[in-house]
Length: 571
Image (tube, rainbow, N blue to C red; front, side):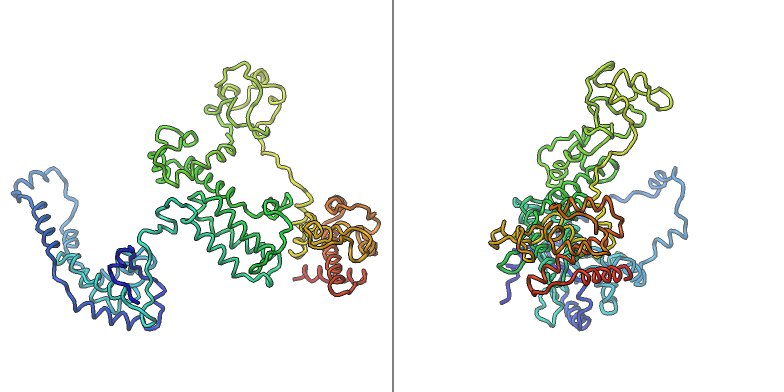
């Protein structure tokens, strides 16, 4: 059932020409039909138009001055426009110039008020060029006005088209978005930005879990899904509820999900969000990442104070103070509230780089890169509390005045090297794991094994999924990941093979992470790659025994490991 034009008007929808319509079959025929039809209905100028014309003709009419008066005013000015230049300027515009100007416009630039972009006119010029040139030349050459154009009639004709025989025109809310961001945010921020969650769901739902390995899921989540909200998070602080719901979608995708059925989540998402050097997978925590992006924008405001955005923000919100000391103020926009909320994070990370020392306070400012707090904690001594760094330096050359430094600071702070990078603690075991030249599926398995997130009988009993926790092969000990892969008799037979780099090692340790740390310390990278692949094969052998009642001989297992590594490294 067709809606009335009054009902559509109340909704506030506006027409927008879509570039994809140019590729529709029969586009040219439909365009020609409606264009020719629209030219037959030339509406006369209405009373309102006449009233405006009469009013402004009087407003801008002046008494014509005499030639002598004009010459006396312009006499002191030198001539800049020659006769030939003046002749060119007074020439009438031509159809070729109109067409050339049109072709110079980017085809996908923002459309005009009528909804039609430059691509529409460029692609359809053979049909509408004569009429549009005539209308444009009337305006440019002073023979007509914009009100007389038939563009409005043409828009109405296209807007009313229905069914597959039309252009498939769609409408959108007026002033709803600008550059892909919401132009207005209502009382509910969640409802404003919930479209981001819908896009995340579409990406996750379209990927079939059965076709993706854990390594493939990791790439999809990091490259595709996590990139979706980035653009919005650079400008706005997204609601925590929305961030948590996107987290939940990612977790369900990672661990596998079906309709009305949830798989076991063996590891918390917060642990998986740690960096790979700390035992996680490096997935982003959206709320923290949102704060980091906004803090980066604040840093850009501090770094480039002459940019347009910086000038506008300063004039409106912190005209008389530095941004770091700004208050949130009254009648603040969502953008400013978002930026202001990230300033604490920026303050924590800012560190002065010592130059001439004129602006850095000795006590209170962060300038010591090798201290945990980055600032001097010793009591004020020898100088006043607001003393600057320049008072610790030799006047010329910018070097430290050792005597003043030792008299002012305690021994520990005085002996610090001022220059240097902040030291970082790195867990060598995790770093080595991710640098192994083995298939990603092997790395992912070893990561799960080291954080104990594999479905061993011990873990299944904890979650009340099974009753017995004994290892299905030996049936004598509880099945932990350390027992299954390292110190069970069946695993020892594998590790005691001649080709094994850990043949002489004892198998009494139950914690697999401790075993891996010892291997990292004592084995070469090639040996570690071999051992990591063997660990995964032992687990697959266990699964094959449980589900198919087949047990692989250790010699065959070693041969499979060698073959798979050779195949991977030659690929």
